[in-house]
Length: 98
Figure 1 (cartoon, rainbow, N blue to C red):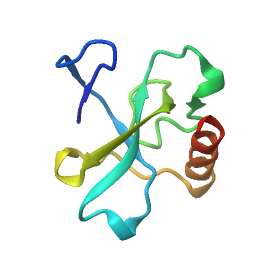
Figure 2: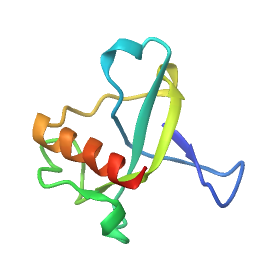
Figure 3: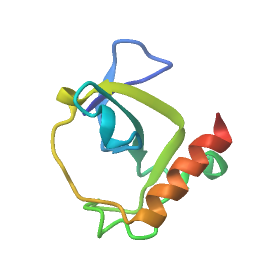
């Protein structure tokens, strides 16, 4: 999906996202975190351990400090599913930040 840069309004980049909200509200908006291959500031990020199995092409992190509220219609391509352990770790990391 196209994610807007926070420090540069109106400039967007297509990014993978991880949906962290539960399935009860997916027909409206979803809460997601963006994914990046820039492995910096890792104390606010979750580093994928099984990134290939998730459908990612290179080592990546979930930017847990950058929550997104987006319409489910903005989601474009389904890459894969995280295992429950990694998804729970991402959600816990989001809670740590907020």
